[in-house]
Amino acid sequence: MRGKAIKWGVLVYLFLVAAALGACGTDKEEHREEMTEETTEEITEETTNASVDFDELREINPDIFAWLSIPGTEIDYPVLQSVQSDTFYESHNAEGKEDDTGAIYIELANLTSMCDFNTVLHGRAGEDGDGLFADLYRFADPDFFEDHEYAYLYLDGNVLTYEIFAAYERENTSLIRTYDFTYLSGCQQFLDDLYGTRDMSMNLREGWEGVGVYNYVITLTTQREENAEKQFVVLAVLVQDEAGTINRVVTE
Image (cartoon, rainbow, N blue to C red; front, side):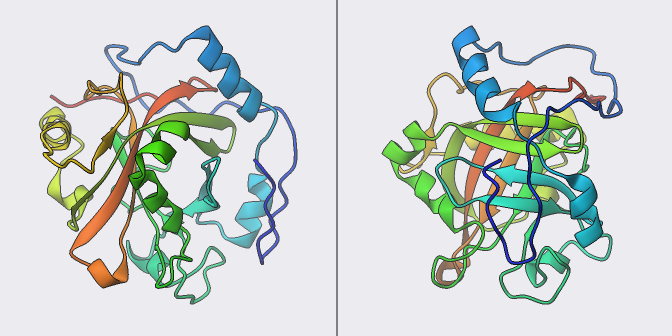
């Protein structure tokens, strides 16, 4: 974590990640991509020496459950889930105060344990490109996409490393309501639609053309207010689970 200063003052400091999260379920089969030794060392160097003080964060707002950081961008923010409504953090900041900037958040249909097949993270791009997720649009550039591979999600007691494998514009519909990610069929339909996209502007990382229903995906989504019919999404797949606790029961 780069320890970026934000107005409500979150203390970010160094310590080794040691605590383990409770298991999320029992998967009947391992379907995770094996990483090369070189890639593993590269990720470990960036992540194992840093973490977030979640006790401090929860004192600011108990809805904070994670911290998202994407190197090479300004995206370095807490992630929240409201018990009040799925849209609460569209108009409230990470302190829970009314603010048009909003916050980064997931809906109630997703688990804060990050054990879902697809966890959808929402954030605003802002009218002038100054929103929390404005930098997602940088992944529309093939060169930027190629050079920026990883996103890190810090949980209390764990660090998850995701490899960004796709970025494209899609119809502005709710992914959570369009696909039932609790069933294999819903997960597969999402993947079929993803890989069936015929858009020359879509960026897809070589080697990740076969993400499957047993992977763990995050979808970062935003939209520009002048083009409300479209949303821009950046997809990343889990490649390293430091505490080894990300797992789930899959319903046929």
